[in-house]
Length: 327
Image (cartoon, rainbow, N blue to C red; front, side, top):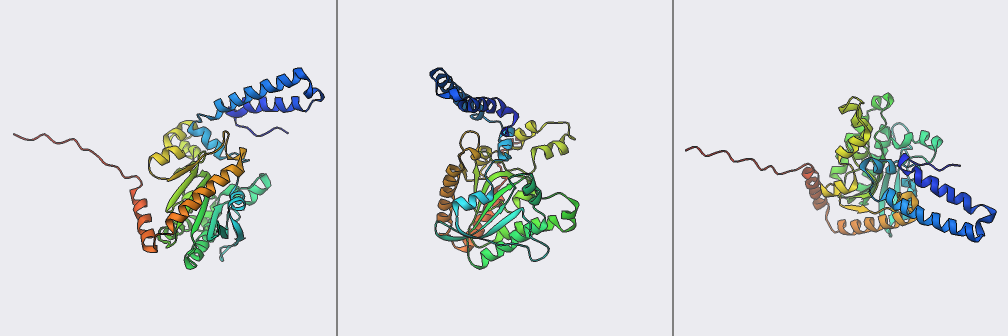
């Protein structure tokens, strides 16, 4: 079975598959074959570094979408203990594109909410490829209320190309559900920590993607719109997503420069799916560190700082040219 690979990864994957085939042969232990294996391993390592060391913004978007990339449920299992999932919005149904519930982070009680993609086509159809309907955001809103009621820090995991765009979602109030979620996030009197683990597209991501501390994995992205959506709107579909991705400033390093996020968790060459346990460990460190700092603040301070943070996004200083003095 051939491994999934994007075009820019294909030469590397083909070389790795060739190496695997040689290792499976009966003559793999012979001296000349062993020498060939050693040579290929060195070439693969060089090519891996060359392929992944200087990824373009569009390539990072592709890595963020990789089907083998760890999902929210993987991080919950690796980082938290005693997770109890809660279901439903108490209005319509349980949206599987959003999961959440009570958990413990390093012994501390917390509430966890996150977008959930599937691992294969069947699961993705059930979970709408991680694109929530309004009931998904209403479920998230219900869990936010519980977190506030029981004074539990809230930790969210962002991984969606956007909210579900179908007509049924609009009929059930998609925009209102996202707006209500955002309004609640802005006034929660508990610490809110956001971890962007993959895709962060549009209001679908923003609905659970704003807080007191913002963390992104190295190859995740966060944007007002996907590159393809940007092309469709601004260039009437005649541009290309590579160009849009470069202009949108959606990568973790760029957003850190702009002061929109606080921390970046490094990923192994090729993405988080190449060493998920390592990435989960490093992400946990950042979450624990952020939580320790935030619990020192009282509820009023948390809300005030969060509002100030939001109001600073997009802020800039203009230096006007002085008008000439009349004589």
